[in-house]
Length: 240
Image (tube, rainbow, N blue to C red; front, side):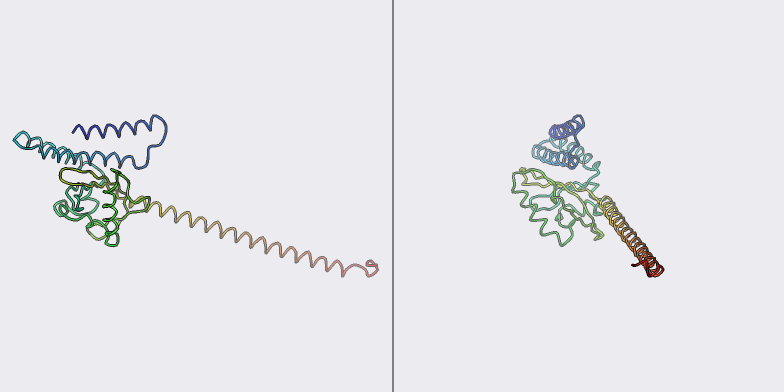
């Protein structure tokens, strides 16, 4: 528990430092804070499980499980941990709500169950490559929109952060996922509005230019007619 509290305290200090200095906190800070706490929490429970050799150890394990479950189930984002084979070993309440799969139906299942078929191969390769790097956590997608798949088959946009940790039970990957459907929809609507406004402005410019052209042409025609009339009306000797 001390590890989790230390990580959360450090993250809170960093966020407070940004506020005190007047500089904006990084966009991914909330996800990174949650990711660090969740990853350390999983590792801590596994460590306690290894130490549970007697009744007192079992009680400590039960308490650890309960505290971690409370932490994970109170999170607003989906938190999913998979083993080295990318099979789900932890799946919180927010994940149930976002993806539509209940926990009993996801534990032991491959993470690719939550990914659209066309993205599954690339996702698996990316996770394996990430596990071979010295980086312990990062945001996924490199700025591009990622997509998940609900139990209904519906695809939806999401943002994600991933962390990996080497334990006595092998390498673990913890992913925190956030449904950004509403944000993407709002962005698309704003983009469509901007495009429509631009089209209206261009149309209005064209209309005004056409009207000015027509008015100028009419004025020139009138001047030309007046000049012709004046020449015809002038006495012949005036030309001399």
